[in-house]
Image 1 (cartoon, helix red, strand yellow):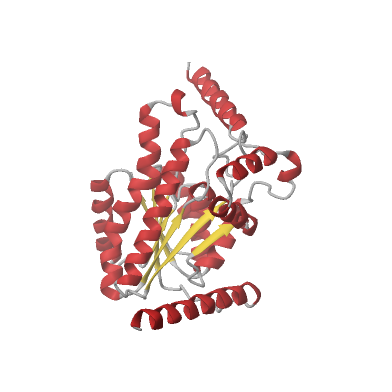
Image 2: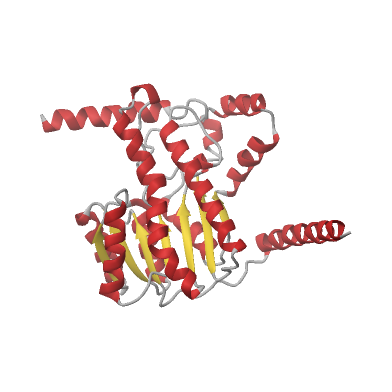
Length: 316
């Protein structure tokens, strides 16, 4: 009897949340204020990280900028300060857990407050086919895109739990929800990032830390140069072009400010995610071939090799 009652309540909750989230597509929920929040962003020296820093500052948050490149990081801080925002820079290797823990303590000591929002944005890709890729580059991708999440969350989550207030944002990728050929290192690391984030979200809900929110951001290819050369079928690309970085960050911010658990950018990319779960493997394969997604990374790899070759010639 208890089982049947719990089953009935579960089904009612499922229907309620489906209706609520469908309504949210039409009627946007009220956004939360983040002025006064201390936001730490990894990989803030350029690309999406720099834009996130500016967007958070625009909403009144104070930003802590972590990047392995101190010079680029200072440029981001300068842009934030020119907007009238507050920015604090730290040169950090997020793959080194001792470096992460040491700088986390330094942030608390320097600023006299705890980080309340963590944006795990740092990411890399090897840009080589697996059998051609040096082991060191594969390890680097896993360390930056996956292992670093453990170190940063372990550094800042305890204080969020203590206050039952915080927000952890993971910038993953649609390639963490479905895959394509020749980027095994990136797909593996982003699938791992998605799994890490979802498990953490379940843990926080199970332990009833409802004040600590989580948002998983899964964008399509973003035009930052990271996947330069990547190309799908021309006709399909008209519907699904590479994302403008500013648009991507604005859409992610929209989700963060309403505590949305998951956002795929653009919305069209929810479709292949669902197809992967519902359709036979062979159906997905023929769809990939039709779209040109099966070979989309080949020109990217060729472009990356040419860039590396040109750099080697320049150095020589």
